[in-house]
Amino acid sequence: MTASALTRPGERDRLSVKLGEIDWRLVGLLALIAGTGAAMLYSIAGGQWQPWAADHLIRFGLLLIAMLVLAMVHPKWWFHGAYPLYGFVLFLVLLIELTPLGYTAGGARNWLNLGFIRIQPAEFMKLGLVLALARWYHAHTAKEARWSWKLIFPIAMIGVPSIVVAAQPDLGSAMVIALTGGAVMFIAGLSWKVIAAGAAAAVAFVPPFVMFGMHEYQRNRVLTFLDPTQDPSGTGYNIIQSKIALGSGGLLGRGYGLGSQSQLEFLPERETDFIFSTLAEEFGFVGSFTLLACYLAVIIISLRIASLSHSHFGRIAAAGMISFFAIFVLINGAMVMGMAPVVGVPMPLLSYGGSSMMTVMIGFGLIMSTRVHRYAELPKGQGLF
Image (cartoon, rainbow, N blue to C red):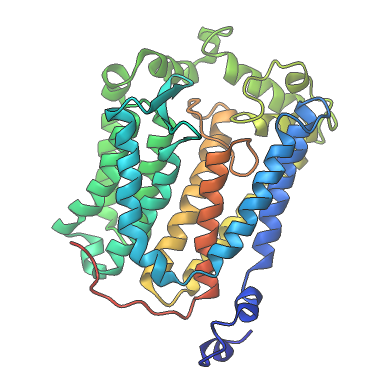
């Protein structure tokens, strides 16, 4: 469909035209990754659809429909809902800390128990943060984005939820929130001098934070990452077993359903955090490389979509959404290879988990909306600050 057809009155809002503007390559790649996840979940359950594979496929199917519906939503609604969504999700994050509704799982009080459902607000904070930052930058000049006292507002938007989530303590989610916010500031044009100064400050801050700001079990994870053999049957067990699984896969893998580390349950959390290790053991280097190539293709296509948007909000929001997707892939990949501490970050669409998949698919709904409505213009000067 040409640009002229999309800009003719009465045609650009037709559902058939909008559906034709969906990037079906991207949809196919997302389905391929989620399908691979379901196949691995089927394998580690001993050739059974329950308890993971069937739920994984059903969730993805429903969320894929939701993604396509969100793609039809005009960017102006994302734009106007940005600040309210950020405020609402931040309220939910604070609700965990301030009320008995907070629920502890896996050593972190990061779930909100509403009785009929449990949700993890930190997952949705990534969406709210990207949208809020995109709206803020839409209303400000490139010079202000590069360096200005006004940057205190986006820094506060990033810092408040990061600190609250880290205190729960959910270091993995806090890290993803902070890195996602930093990526958006970089995309928006933050000065390289400020980036260099921030990186230096972060490096200087890490040692005292590890020694005095972390809980003991978190500090042990970091120290174990540096030398897993210090406690091979305790805190170092996860990383050691993950490395064994990765190495035993070789070039072509041990075969589907034949991974000893996962099938014999030596590999911990093989359905969530360490599912990539399971895939590497059964399909080897070739399978792992193919999956990572699919992730890279998703990232490149999404960045291309972001660059085509005529509105600054659309460009920043779409690029921000794919940033946290890429951060998920990088952190989980580094974690299972022993190149980063184990912080509980899933491999997107591959790992089992409802909140993570929902966040990712809503993000791709916005990316698709940016493509479908890439010629849409949004007015400037509508920032709160």
